[in-house]
Image (tube, rainbow, N blue to C red; front, side):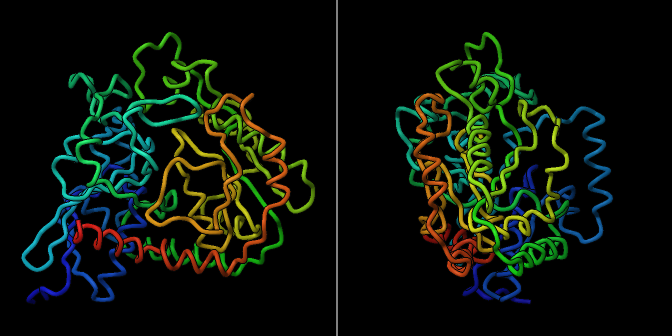
Length: 401
């Protein structure tokens, strides 16, 4: 069958080793292809092709278990990029999507190589001073280690990434999808997960605001660190010491404030200890992932404090999809369209020393959150953040590089 040259052809060449970060985008591409707006092809390795089939969940589980047994537990950052190209008319433009949780980590080689570099956690500002967390700047650095012999390690000193400044015009913001839509990228599994999210819209809003945080403290700081891995939270905390307090500590304070506000507020902190320990001390507070948006949908607001390295968490899209607005500390990363009334910022927090946070003002803002209609939040979501709209933005950006 001859390809229609008026319809862009999207070819995915690498699904990456972090498929859960890209399932929203893959689903959007499927939808565009089903509508005839694009043709879609996956030119990926056989191991990734298994992810596209409907009946390979068992095989994927076995594959992941084998990796854990043989010690393939360390995630290689250099294999975390979704890659492909868009062919339209006589032109072909390449792209990659960077899902790194650090807004200031890039892949210098890919920045040189591709035509368009999408960043899920895209910094609002790329400054020669570095990226601001709290009142400290940390550098823009590379996903590659400074010493190639360290490849495969959990952490080590990383190269700086001057390519960020040289190729800044190639960098485009994207958005953050849900934490997981399943074990594979098959249309059947993604479609079922998406329809489950949409079903949360039928839940009646009865509460004012909720929060759902994993931990009340950051990870245990690395001791005596002088050359930190800037993608390693413990190193960052160990390096700066008492010059900052972790966002998780502020999340715990926010939860305590919300619990003091009375009826209509639901504040949960699953583990009152350090993060990255794998321990849940309050199992009764845990909400299964498949039910999370239905819980969020009960409230007008989902309250957030920026995550590791000031990242935006998946709770944003979990909320928008069902018509719940977000209240958050001041954002240092951006999506590709400015937020409207569906996001309210209540002040600078992040990694600031706790003594520099005005908690009385934050409390007042949380008590007096302005009403935002469920219909408005859903309207904004459908206009900008639904999977097909995200996929179309990617294609348009690559074509118009």
